[in-house]
Length: 295
Image 1 (cartoon, rainbow, N blue to C red):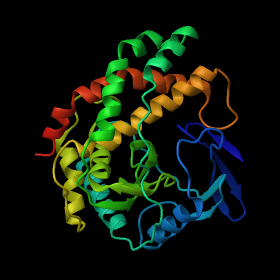
Image 2: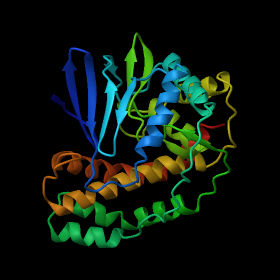
Image 3: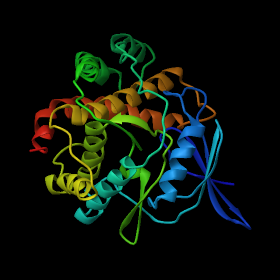
């Protein structure tokens, strides 16, 4: 197997055989942030593939390893996609949400951690390069945690991919291919649509998201038979909460100061923390502007 570089949480390899090429994903089992329901996700993937969703064919899944048939395509950069690409993603989401697949696991109700003062103190004590920035934003991170826990989510809740971001997409002939389904589960519809539309409408940061591309995702969703939920901050609570948890998880890996055997390398965790510490306060402060995209 040949290691494929990248991956924010797991490690990927390409395996070439006389039966074709396969993507073999080694799941991080050391410090997972969520319970992975391998059999249920695999069943969901098989149903999506059978329904014609553009995605790699799922071959096998265990608690530690996922295998899919390899698909060649162009990586999708962190930049606004074309309107046609965004529209098709919206249609794909509507088709995913229409699948009749049983799911017995309720969404997590865990309270968002509030240990940001302690993390800032540990970062300073261990000389982390982002320690001063984190200390300056402790109150903002606490406010973000309160927002994530208290934001009203009007529903409905749907079984969905939960992580359609540029790094989980390919383009083949200009059309989407959806990768990396292991976060699949139940999610408030507004959170899924807001996260997806914003991720495809913006660049690496959150400045100047393209409203045309944002709306194209929603227009595609409606054209695919979906119905949009009410406007409000809940459209962005899931994305902000996800980035908050991702930043905290990488902070803990950096504070440990050792190269773990699975998951992202320490250098990538350091980069993720820097991006989160600088970007999350800005994203949170721009909530009113993001809500304006829904009008």
